[in-house]
Length: 375
Image 1 (cartoon, rainbow, N blue to C red):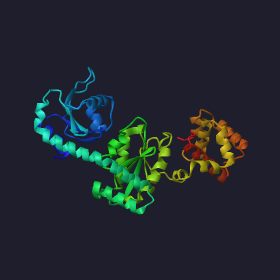
Image 2 (image 1 turned 45 degrees about the vertical axis):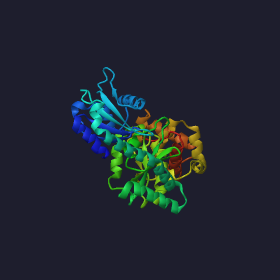
Image 3 (image 1 turned 30 degrees about the horizontal axis):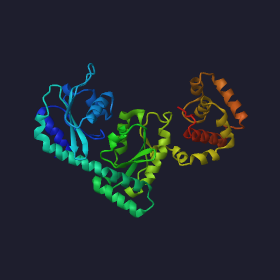
Image 4 (image 1 turned 90 degrees about the horizontal axis):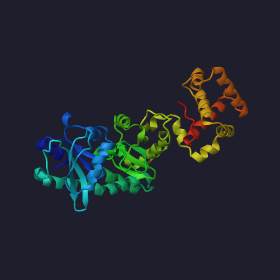
């Protein structure tokens, strides 16, 4: 019996919605969900794919018990009662079934007819969890190994595990790791059907580069919001070249970490970053050394608001009246301030080279942590 067959079978037997998660709270399968038997926890888990306060209450109780237990919601919470069924193998609990059961239709004995199915699904989950480290090792080899032979073997292992989905073009997706968060929203979204591994400060996923894959990622990103942003690397022709895409995605995360840049975009897509791609490819230390000395002095001696004003003035998008209004000054005052700054730092923004040097310096400074992002 498969995962979906189990939850559908329980729903058919008792007409109570069922959710199956693994031991790390990743959603595996869920049954139908009548409106009368849907609450905030069900919506968080199935629709938003994130763990809110209600979900955390249920999950904490589940992890405390190795036997079937009932979750009684706090008064006034508008949550529904649940029966929590742990799925165990000799080594421990590998998953949980959550049955919404406010009418007490189901008890321990009522589930006796599903014991064999519970054991079968628990074994499947154990095999999934057992193979997880092997998949991570294969992803890390693909991302870092200089041996073409090792990369081929790693690609073969992933292909055997995930099938023909990874036979064609692929991309890497990078998500910044957050301390104290084991299961991120992106792992909930992507981790079940795609190979991934934690690499230094990022989680790297490998995804097929289907025509609609970017659009699907953007839909997921909108549901996740700005809480955890992601970045997508270039398309490559085969798994063995995925490190090129991963490098792009990790670089793009430097932009994604600062919400002042492209705040409505999650994930950022390398292909769509235009000239930012060249700047992101420059080593941060080297970029600082190569910045025009006059611009470097400007950045070091002006406050963030002034730097932001300069960048808004120099880059296309807003006229001088817009910039003046943004900083609550008359246009004449704006021009006067800009002239004084140019004189002080010996810059001429009518000169194309000085203008370009200033724009590049401000953008590189932004990537290094100086907040000079223009709206």
